[in-house]
Image 1 (cartoon, rainbow, N blue to C red):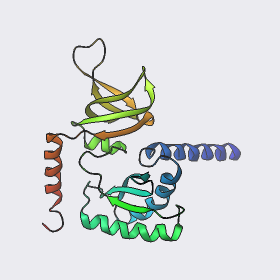
Image 2 (image 1 turned 90 degrees about the vertical axis):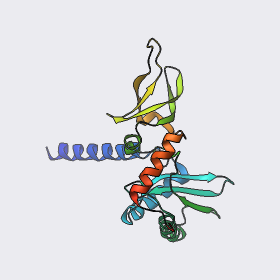
Image 3 (image 1 turned 60 degrees about the vertical axis):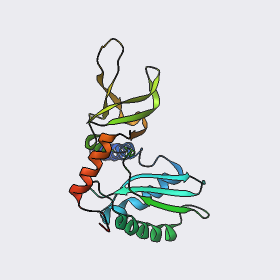
Image 4 (image 1 turned 30 degrees about the horizontal axis):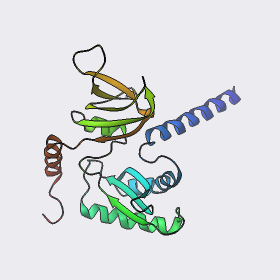
Length: 204
């Protein structure tokens, strides 16, 4: 029985590892980005920041872009500077990327990427564009009003053949390759409202 219990513990640990990978696959996929994310996640969270997305090779091919925010979704200029100094020190010591590169730490922006289940909850009611890694019924790209996240699926309002009105459909989170908000006047107004509730930006 002891052996069976150990096997179950190992299976449980493997399942936790798979869920961890699933939950963060949009934050950092594989390769250098994943290596950096695994390195900086814990220290960033200890300092009060959540990593939204890590991408390497943007712009000139030598830029490491790290998007982050506080738990409430805010990210001021001073926050970017604080996090940049923290991560620079870690990356200089650990040296996960060979050669020279530019570190760019920023907020997620208004037309932000959606990378975590809570992002799809927080921004429901706004239009989003989603691209799947695997097609569903021959389709990879979807665009519509976001209706949150439920049971491992992203809920989005979309035209469905056979229905006169758009329907709310579920897209498996594990198959989402990219998701971001669509810029609109409503989104800009809501982003400004949320910023005002969080307090004035630095220098205001």
